[in-house]
Image (cartoon, rainbow, N blue to C red; front, side):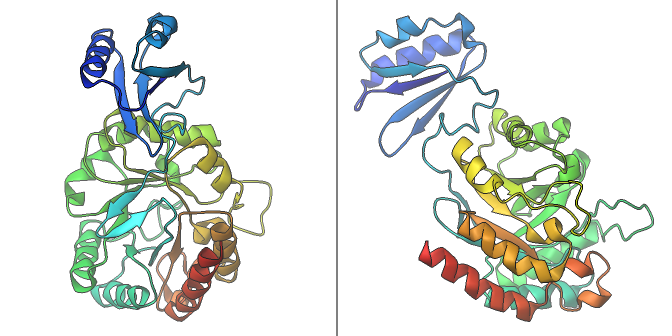
Length: 332
């Protein structure tokens, strides 16, 4: 349920309404928008009398929300959510470029790539420390040492860092990580999502390989329901019958998710395609469709990368791509 307040609503009446709703076991989530103030009511609102609330002097309108996701719903929060990380704003009309290797391999590698992508316009550094791999024999990442190397790259370049968490027990290692990534395989790990909802740190959630839009939004809801509103949605391709590409990039996810939700939406064309040559056109399509950012895998030597070399572009290719993406954004 959402309660739309009249302009300049009386403070004392608002406090009285909020106190009553809280006493009924309803969580009240206020949103001050550019045109109105909305109270999002989360909980068992079936026992709340709409007519009683509508009759209050401070109330403009009351509506029930049918969708199961509430906090992530644009009806609760009409304006775009903007998440600021280290001076970078994600969402709200900004284009955020996130770049870096699939996995952290060495100090020289990660710092060198970080310096290159920053020079080309990236404002967030990505890099895997813990790598969920389909094969137990594949490179699994440097784990804690990988995070330490990411932090060295952050210190050297000033770039905020994003890296993937695999288990809630690893959380202490992420104290200095700027954005925690939840991978496609963990998108419905509700225990992990609940824990991440209890920290004050942005969380990027990748869409599961067979997940619907509602599935993804419900995963965001798990985080937001615990009190952490800083969630970023990431479309990274879904599994279809097509085998030419690693996955099938769902460009429609950008306008659909931005219609349904106020949360930032970014695209990962690297995991979607699995082919470096397809990363630039898919990234450009994503920006043209209204994505708030792109996350691209960049490696200084893709042919010898320990992880996902075929889908990684070189720093030189990223430099060219970033200029084109900024031009597309500027023309919208």
